[in-house]
Amino acid sequence: MKGFKGKLSILVPAHNEGAHIYGNIQEIQRVFSEIGCRYELIVIDDGSKDETYENAQKAAKGFNNVIVKRIRRNQGKGRALKYGFRFTKGDLVAFLDADLDLHPEQIQNLFKIMNKERADVVIGSKKHPESKLDYPRQRKIVSNIYFLLIKLLFRLPIKDTQTGLKLFKHEVLERVFPKVLVKRYAFDLELLVNIHHLGYKIVEAPVTLNYQRIMGRIRLKDLYHTGMDTLAIFYRMYILRHYDR
Image (tube, rainbow, N blue to C red; front, side, top):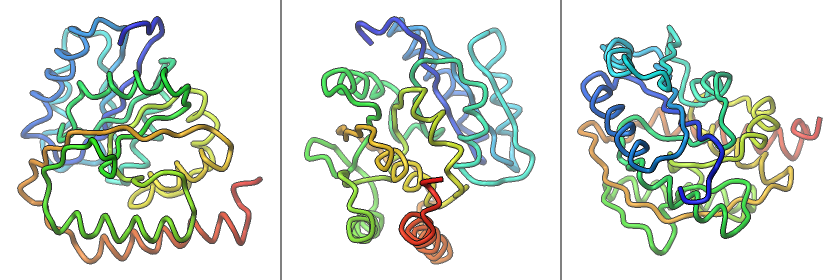
C-alpha cells in the first residue's frame, strides 16, 4: 500500500469456519507482511458451533497484531463487525470475509482507488465491468433482482452493496455505526445508505471472486428476512426519518 503511513485494521467476521480459519489467518498475515504496511487483524467468532474460535486463537499465537474476539451466541455478521470495530486502532478499516472467496491482496487495489478518487469508502463490486466472477448462476440472478429493488427504493450511486470486501476511513464508521440497527441480512445496505445520506463519497472497485463454499444454496428464509430488513431500512429512512436524529 504505497504511500500509506497510517495503520490498517482488518475486521474478519467468522461463523463455523473452523476447517479453514487457521490457514486463512496465516494467508492474511503472509499477504500484509509482504505488503509491509502497519496493520492489525481482528477476527470475530460469531457464535460458531465448531472449532472456529479455538483454531483462530492458535493461529494468533506469537503475533501481537492479531486479536481474536468471541460472541457466544450467533447474532449475525453486522453485529460481529460492530463489536469488532470497538477494538480497532487503524486509520483505515477493511471488512474481509473469513472464507477468503475475496482474496486479501485485493485490499491494496481498494486503497489505490481510495487515494485516486479521494473517496471516504471503497467497496468491492460484483457489478463493476472489470470484476472477474466465479459464483453460482442462482446467486447472480438473486443479486440482480436485489440490485433493482435497491435502485428503486434508495437511488444509491452504487450497484452492489453486498460484496464482503470494503475499505473505510475510520471516522466514517465511527460516525455511522451507532445509526445501524440491522444485525444480519441487510446490514451492508443500511451501513451504506447512512454513509451516503451523510454525504460521504463511496466508490466501487472491481473484484475477483472465487466462490468456494460447498453449501452455497440460497434459503428462502434468508431471502424473506433480507427483504423485510430492506423494507425496514426504507421505513426508517423515509417515513420515520430515524437516521436524521
